Structures are given as structure tokens and as C-alpha cells.
Image (tube, rainbow, N blue to C red; front, side):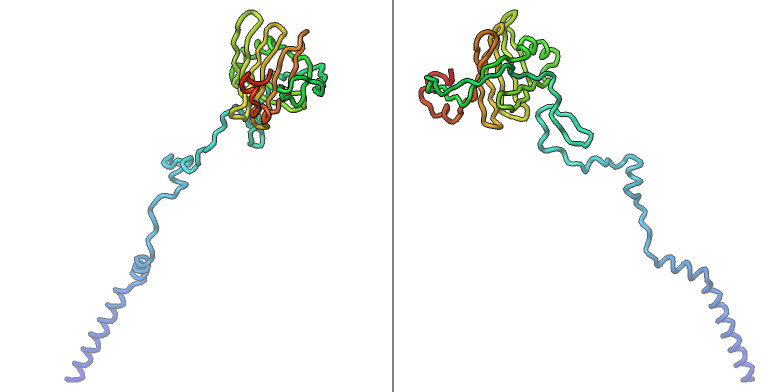
Length: 231
């Protein structure tokens, strides 16, 4: 009788073991492993947001803190260069004036030349009216330097007389003022980039004097201060 009870107990244990093994099937193990692994992020990538238009790629670009005040043109390499002048002005028939015998001790001239401004200011006036204030005029000086003038304005005082004024390109305070009556021209060029001042006055016969002035001497001369500077 005891042997029979032991046999029944053993059979019950075997059946319980089989049932336990069936409960732990391979599918169950895989499912448990997937549960343990780190979950995958469900947030969309930046590329996806960019494609849908939800992200503005330009937000990261910093604005230019020092925008150019003067007109400029882009070169193929991506840099910027001065615009091309619509006209170039120079003095022809140049001859240097001998200042060694000059009796004017308050002229403060460094060097002086006599020549003819070409083209004439009346011609420049006509071109200026077509170009507007965005045009650029190149002026070649007797010492082989050059200034480029922009933001030019013209004021007429009669059929063949007027004043042309403008700012020197890339120079905050530099300016040019040229007045004319027929062929007579007078004016000044103040190039603060190079600390140069040029005075222009009529020489007669359609020619002009253009002198480079010693700015330092002019500033400390009491006589020039009273009489308004260079004659």
C-alpha cells in the first residue's frame, strides 16, 4: 500500500514538472528579453523635422554686426570689392609748380601742379544725373593716388554752373566738393584715410591748380584760422 502511494506522489511531481516546462516556452523567453532591453526613442530626427519645414535652418546664422555702408559687388570667390566707377576723372597736361620762390608763407602747400581736369565737370554732371547717388566716380590725383566718390549730389546755379559733392568710398568723414562756372573749377578733396587734403583753384584758360596741403601746419597756423584757411 505504501509503495502505491509513493508511486502516485512521484507521478504527480512529474506532471507538475511537465506543466511548468510548458509554461516557460521559447516565445515567452524572447518576449521577456525584449521587455528588458532599452526602449527606442520615438522623437523624430532633426533631418525629418527639417524636411517637414518645422525647423528653420537659418536660425543658427549670426547677423553681420558691421554691415557695409557703401555699395559693393560680390566677386566669384565670395568676397566683396568696390563697385566699378561710371567715370574716371584725371588731370592732363600736368606740370609741377615750383614753390621755392612762393611768397605766401601761409599757403602750407606741400606740392602743387597745374593741369586740365578731364572730362569736364559739366559732362560729369550729365552722367551723375543718370547714375544717381549709387554711382561711383574715380578721381586720379597728381601723386598717382586715387579716391572713389559716391553718394554724389549735384546742385545747379545756372546753365553752366553748379556744385558736385560726395563722400569718399570707405571713408566715414572723407568728402569731395567741386564747383564750376564754365571752365573755371574750384574745390577741395579731404581724404581722411591718408590724412590728405587737396585744394583746387582756377588757373585760367580752362586749367586748374591742385595743391596738396600740410594739414598739421594748417591746424596750428593762427593767421589761416582767422582768414579761413588756404587761399
